[in-house]
Amino acid sequence: MAIAITGCPGAGKSTVLALLSEAGRTTVQADLVAREIAARPDVRDRISSVLGLPPDAPVELRRARIWGDPDRRAAVNAIVHPLVAAALRAHPAEFHEIPLLVENGRMADYEASWCV
Image (cartoon, rainbow, N blue to C red; front, top):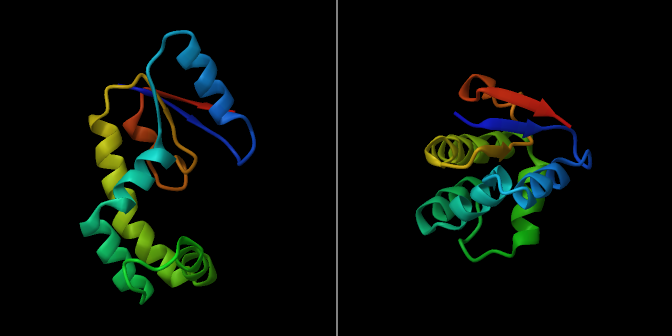
């Protein structure tokens, strides 16, 4: 089981992860996994449908729709977050940077959590 690294935006989670990586520990960032998952055609199409946009809509417009509407944001999160959680559970890295660890109720998935 891995150790989760979490904390507020700008707190230094990525810096801690980089230091661990430099020390030879295996790491993964949930945000990067989420971007990869959201870029998959099947997921991108589901997200586009929720947002009422074509799949090739500009990123800025997609972001505006997500952040401007709490219901759409919740619907997109309901698509992406379970897929990210499954991918991270299967990932062999020792340390996982997860900004929304507590908010998504994922603390039980980890041996320990470090809050930066």
